[in-house]
Length: 341
Image (cartoon, rainbow, N blue to C red; front, side, top):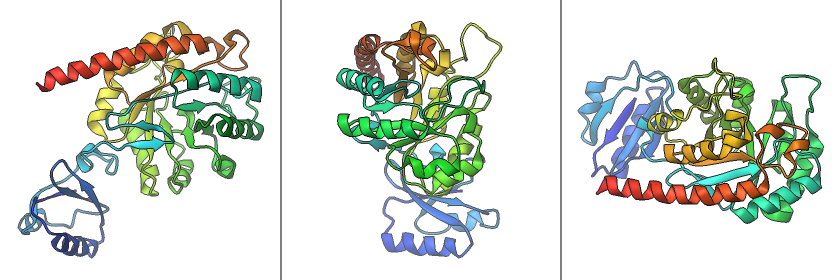
């Protein structure tokens, strides 16, 4: 349930109303609207009389939210949430790029890639230490040593790092990791999400291979219930009948999610396609669709990569792509400005 307060509502009046609502057994959250405040009620609101609420002097309107996702709902939080990591920011008109190898192979490899992508304009370094693989015979990552390498490279380059967690027991190992990634396979690992919700670290939440947008937002709810609102949603492709690409990159998810939620939305065209040659055009398409960022797999020797070399672009290709993204964002900004006029 949402309570829209009048513009001239005093703080004392609002506090009195919030206290009264709390006595009804619901949780009350305050959000800033465009010109006024909103009170979002979560919990069992069925016993609350909307007509009685509307009769209160400072209340302008009352609406019941029918969607099962509450905290991440755009209606409950009209303003974009901005997630800041180091000098990078996602959401609210901000755009940042995450890049790096699929998996950490050595410090020399990660450091060289980090230096190259930082020079090109990437804001965050990604690298997998724990690798969830379909085949048990595939490279599973360097695990704890991989995280240590990422932390060392982060200190040497000043770049914040993103890496994927697999289970709750690994959380203490991620103390020096700036953004914890929840992969597609773990998007509905609710016990893991509950644990991550208790942390204050930003969470990069990837969409599951066969999950709807509503299911993605329900997973975000698990994180937000624990008090963690630093969530970046990631569209990384879904499973369809098409076999020419690794997954089907659902770019329609970007504008739909921007309408449904206030959380920032980024796109991973590397996993979304599985083909390095179409990563650049799909990344540009993601920018045009309104994404708040992209995550690109970059490897200095894709042919000999231990993981997902087929979808990795080289540092020089990444540098070209960053310049194209900058031009695309300029075009999109001009288009939006013309629409407003």
